[in-house]
Length: 357
Image (cartoon, rainbow, N blue to C red; front, top):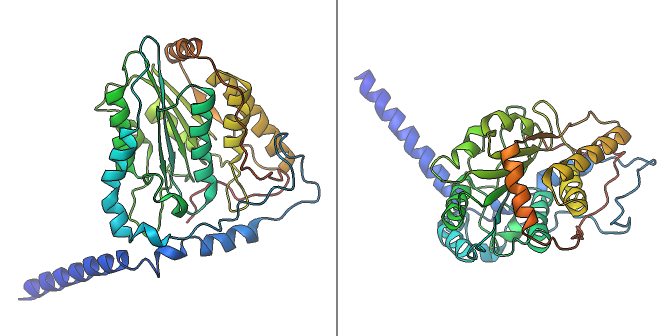
């Protein structure tokens, strides 16, 4: 009798839990629309400008407005969180349907950009800029898929979830020539000491991403040539699970170090600025862009008195040879400025890209 009563009690508790979860998903006005309130207050209280602020990047001026998260509210026309989840299959189909056929006779490059944390605009900005940079400078028009968690883009882009990311990889695999073409996967978000990429769009129940999850994206595909760039704290911890003879991995930090530049007063992370806006505009090779980015980041962190993040690269002769063949077959466009950026004071202690929640 006691065992039966225990089972009934457990079943009732489980049912109540399920009903509570369903109810929460149907309350966007009280839950979903307060995404940025607490983080915004925390971010602004942690930013303490220094009178000895370093010079802003050359392409920016000090009078640009801050990216202040004012659009971080769940829009009325996006429907409820449940409706948004239901709409993802169609949104992915629409995005995949816009992929252009590969250009025959030469290696093609496909970009998949993933902005994981919906609480700060910095990640959205970085993913959108990566799309613009590769489309305009590196001949990737029609060969980009962008997934973003941000209330302002719910109707524009599919959300950045692990499921959508797998669909994106599979769609590109179906379009590309596995022997010639290259996939660039650009992941930007917070990262944790446990090497977990933070994925959040409150109140949606989204899975976090670990190194094996990224490796598994390619397990059932014929994709060989990959460039995986991870802009997050502790992202060097992803390298061991991803490295291989046809894969280049670039990370914003080593496995045990934080990186810098997120927060509501930032428009792009330090590594994103150094690698994308500086490195890939000044260079047409990934290793050269990385070398410049690592140097710049080191200079900025020294000036700010921060512990160095030490960006990492893992590469091979095979993937570099294929990247050279791709580069030799295109005509890079002119540099693409990061026009929405707000200059960051590198001598101010900014919040790091850590999933400390």
